[in-house]
Length: 374
Ligand code: AOF
Ligand code: ZN
Image (tube, rainbow, N blue to C red; front, side):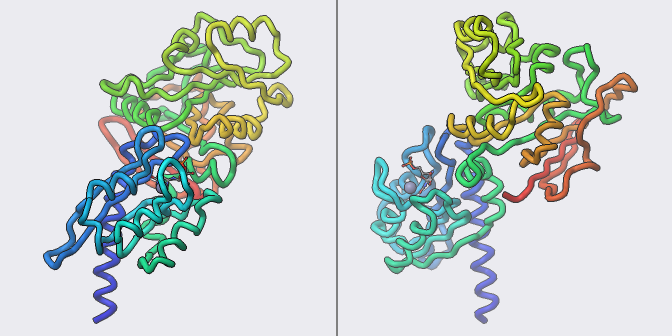
């Protein structure tokens, strides 16, 4: 029965694509400006499907995932199926195009998840395969792949990084208390989850208010992952960040950018620049940094994803301008009370167009994530 056979094949395809997507996460945040892609090569000699090669885009972006997987499979590529989370490339880089490499290796079938918007590739990768007689199945687990490649897709299609809004809410919907610095809202598990999120992003962004109030470090402090901190960005139109702040002190280890008015006091700028702080001159409208222009500049610097971590007014600005692509909310057990700062967003006020991706409860902390389709 053809129908039943198709279904079995589709199930198998989804299973291997899910594995390829999990594999691709291994280098998320470490292949910039290339996306981290996964490839799994499977062959079936009659005794059931067997994985004969796996590859993930190498740290730094090259070699591509396909190159690694084909090398691992060696001779076993002949007649095999390749599962790729992104359309194989069609351009000549340090190696010939992956689409050609798959053909040369004798791959009989390619199953792809996302199409590649890069104009050097877009549609051409699949076309090379088809012209060479390779069977191609596109869009398997496409929405999962789009979610995983969101940063890369945003930067390619919209010329800005993906913006992830992260916020920790108390049980009564507050994000802190004005004038009290960092107020503990969530527990240890949530802290680790946030630090893990940071390892996959290109930068963490906060406003000067939060920088002055909390004096945060904004680094990754997880055993074994201490060197995976993304850059830090402070929106600071008047360059008020003190050179003695933790953010500036850590600049030798982790880059720090200040987005500020290009006409800001030259001495303040020179002082911070001497400490190693990088300056991004951005238009300021009514005392506020122009966010679309800033995001364009960040994309030009090679950033594909940024996490907005504070405070309320910065979050509100990103939300108001429709510049948030992913919302991650933590909810802790503490009650802050009437003097607390109300969160600009909560689980019941997620803007239209977002869908809930996951939700869980660990220890005492709740966690939920929403995304919108690019
Ligand atoms: C693939 N496999 O694993 C990845 C791909 O600078 P280059 O030459 O490495 O090219 C970057 C482009 O390669 C990038 O924009 C995207 O189109 C593709 N990424 N392609 O076949 C991979 N990471
Ligand atoms: Zn390639």
